[in-house]
Amino acid sequence: MARKKTRSYGKGSVYAYKSKAGTRYRWQASFRIDPDDENSPLERLAKGGYESMSLANEAMQLALIEAKKGLSPKTSSEKFGAYAMKWLEIQKLANSTIKGYEKIIRVHLIPEFGSLTLGQIIPSAIAKFYKELETSGNKGRLTKGLPLSANSVNKIHIVLGSILDSAVADGLVRVNQARNNPKIIQAPTGRSIRMQKKELKTWTTQEVNDFLKWNKEVYEDEFYALWHVYCWSGMRRGEGVALQWDDINFDTGVISIRRASDSGLRKSVKQTKTYKERAVLMDEDSLVILRAHKSMRAQLGLQFVRGDSYVFGNLDGTVRNPGDIGEKWSKTLKKAQAEIPDLSHLTIKGIRHTHATLLMEAGVSAKVVQERLGHSNISTTLDIYAHVTPTLQQSAVEALGKYLKGA
Image (cartoon, rainbow, N blue to C red; front, side):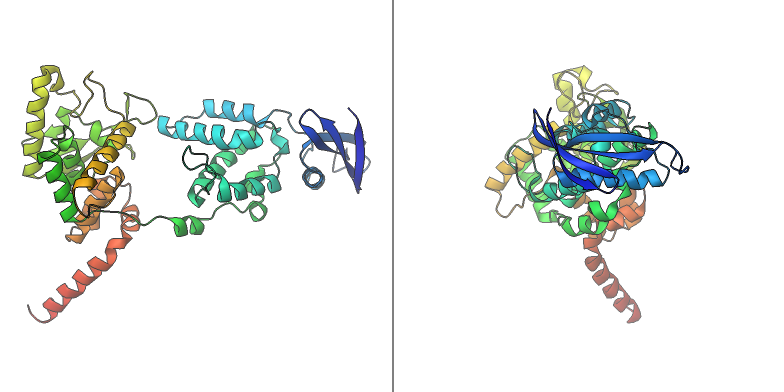
């Protein structure tokens, strides 16, 4: 391949060359084999594949600076795409987390860095990539080209940083460029993520009652008992569909939440999000609804009401997938909104938020709400439901006023 030297930079130089992908740039420079010995012999090193002269020069300058610090300029020629997939295979995480990481690598990281060697991923290239994500990085079928949120970009940053951390540990690169140059890269900050956080959407007590009444009496929904349990327990959607009859104590009114349906592996269950069981006390009306649901399931066959049978399971006896339930909820809500005036849009997660919000507005302590929702600590509960604070403050002021007046 013909090459054309274009510019010299002190101890090194950058030149252009033709490749199948078009014009690319390579740098070459001399390094002392032993950076601590001024008499150490020089070794010539070259690296190519850069899309611009400035990127090649930046990589060379980094290598020169790091060489002075005693870091070897030699790096692996392994491609980022191949290494990222090998990294993913050895991760010991929840299936849903692995699924999320795989999507980030496949949809965002490999298209951008997959053909580059690990050592060619430099700070300015990462910064440019993040900027593009923030302006037009959405790859969804209906949202392609729209900006990604700061939270989404941060998730991509976390995965990229973790892959390069592993590459450093494996001796394939000298430093993790995704973490070593925060001022250049400018990854999303916690503040920017909080500023973009969407307002929490919940229903009023009137909307909850209107929907459940319509769902039972008008729509005659087979999932009515499930929607009711979600509204009155605050459990996560994966926890609700993973309930078994042995988890419900009809004498004490307690539901024990012991597992969740795995969104990353169909027809499988996993531990709860906090890896702990918890008990949720239900009201008598909810128990009546669950007894009626059990009778209906028994009519389908006694195998559906055994102790280890799923309360809201598929007809083949397997656990339902949380994603399927989410889609079912969306379709049902759309029909409800067409018939119930002023019924606002709500995600299935919004039912959980509604349960917590109404409890706090009713004067229930945050500690009890935390226990019902299964948050690992109370600060999570207080942070998520900070919007309820003004209501609680008003109630507190009114209660104090009555107390001081002797009422």
